[in-house]
Length: 394
Length: 204
Image (cartoon, rainbow over the protein chains, first blue to last red):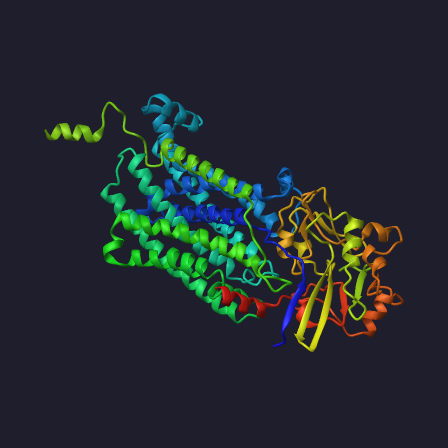
């Protein structure tokens, strides 16, 4: 091999940075939790029905914040609305604009049909702030007859059925947006949408488990994780085990093929397997994010413990954030014209945006799970069921 | 592509390039390109071991591809093709999403830090419209840059492309670039992943 020394070249810093990676993370969480929510309402698996409302509430809360990352990443954020009418039929982003609008709208209407019964009942039974809120949210439709409820369920099923492909499209699209870029070796594979979808399922399940644990303990009418709830959470955790298996398999296939694609593909694979991205990829994304949770969900001692499952869930979130960063930023670091990695430094403004949006997200999740009837209506203070039961026992 | 009356292209005869960067400077002045970013630049490598050693230069600019990935990627039609084949950016409509920059296999685009939109070489559209040549062509001391209408068989560009062994950058991307090189060395035309692996392994 000839000795080649670069004397002059222009550096080309990475353009799509941390904001885009974190946006992919949020959308993935949303899509994952929506699909889990649909298992009960759309696919009719009875045991998952109790988490249907929690799943959609979470999906909406996440997708309410996710697009803000995209707008913050624009150099001309004030022009973002032109995406809606200056369309380019060959640009993936033009389609994504509408997917990102339709999916949350559909989810909101879907959630309303799931919750209308609670709103209507709450408007009658409760008092104070909640009663006013639920009366408003019922939009005057307080019909609680069995026919009306059956109609709700039917509509919810229809919207949920529409929501599943929308959720898959929204997140498949984020993978597609990268896959469609032939210039970047790491991205340019038909597997990319599937990889993004499966990691969305992994992280969506992970966050849903954490949200369920916290919200059931502190915001549900029972204020506790009842044995049935624990059983369901353990069940969902076992689903997560399988999502991890599929996600990891896709990743292995992707890297084997990538290694033998061409010079750029091999360089990309080596960057992740041997190079400077090794720790983030093999260590954090694959090791901490997939392998450790896999073990925790497999070993009988840990897979039955809510504590260990929380740790596994948290690790999947860390792993999927690492995955988004690795693919979005790492994919652009591989040089197109030079002999050194393209540099990336996170803009402090972008980091600040991420922190603000994360706080906003936590606030939205808090208020949604605190005030919406995600787990049914609070018991009226005058006659708490548990209390009465205890009195009766005495 | 619909039949165009004109199809501007550039031939860069590397046998005549001395690597003086006059093109880089004149482009900066002509197009008021801010500090740190470039519409055209000159890559330079040194190949071999003393005394068997040669320097190779490669002036770089937007390829104004026939199959332009940036044109396909732009979600707001801010990137468009002018009537003479030049790929242009509408700075009033660019939202700065940077998707075109990810899509370009040639690193030709950048964000103008002052205007806050994507930007790249326009083949000096404003000059060409006025009957002048692009600034880099006018200024090239060795006459290495030749600009003209590829659709006109009598133009120098068309003759050079027809009568010389020419290369384009990354033909495997099927972008059909409109910047042709005469005498380009393969080691300077794309990325040098070999160096990367070595460097990466050393540090990794």
